[in-house]
Length: 462
Image (cartoon, rainbow, N blue to C red; front, side, top):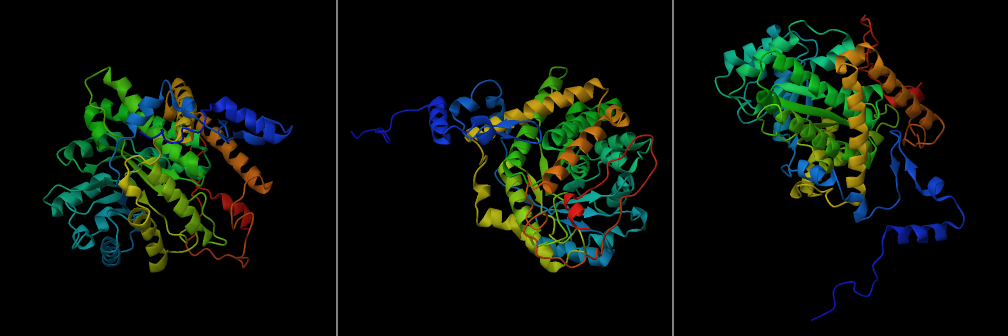
């Protein structure tokens, strides 16, 4: 019988490694040289061992990651007219897309011929998610008139996000949403409640803030809809998360893992009040608008690729990769194809769909997941103590937190403490920019501050 593999090497622990590192540093300060403090205030060590991913919390984090290894390639399509939009959707499905988000913008739903728009698209086989901006009830009524079968897809409307960015929430919003959800109760693959992080992310929130505020938003939906008479189990079944993914590769992986863990933890708390089956956390991930640049714009493809990898390794169920030129012009067929194919390549060539949890077993990522979870939970409790998301927002607590995080990110870029390729370093496109599809943030009135959609590279594009 042979010797065990690596038997000639003596066992070592984390302290042994640290002592060797101190020796190699030759007098340099260990903390200043090797420890990394993130924008969220989390201390990241340079080396992790099994002892860093053991103990209370870690088993629960691993259990929460259970999902299919595959994800849905889900491009976003902006509505133009019935004929053009129908052709764009069919082309996406023919070339690798598996679902679509259809954004109607400010178009009135009652003016749209849904039968022409969806000609040749069978919603029982090809999921379509609809973004209608407070017209969901009109959309569902129109769909019921032309579609006799159960649909796949859902509604992509986050009324709370619109309230935080536009300052308006219809009085009947939660009542209408409860009515819509009850109507679609028999359609298990049609989601009706979308909780998104995009408003927080695009305003400049750090990862802990984004996670805490998104969970606070989800809790608000649950409270409001159960107040409207919806069963808690139905709310859980119909709820999905839509999350922006930034450029901080490992932190974004840990963010999605933390979201699954914390949402499971919240559901477990509710399950003590009534019998409740813990629903897996359905996460749609979208590459970041906030980190896209309009200068040296091809670098956006690189950012989108690493963001997509973070999303997939973090365990997203669906993925939207935004075209690299979307921030300054209408995407063309080439940029749409490149964006769509990033997801295809991660599946067909990187084989990331062959493993249920690619991050499992990484002491670093599991430790980082728990650190982010604990910080986000603490902030979430602070929001709940203020009366919940809406009360905290009306007190400008959330806005002030995000603004401080945004200013920190800007300062780091301006001082060169952080590099964005093609933005504050390694630029090649210096010609004046012409924004073909630029639309300034609306300026509605409200008694509290609203969240503005920002891109951090704008400060270098003037």
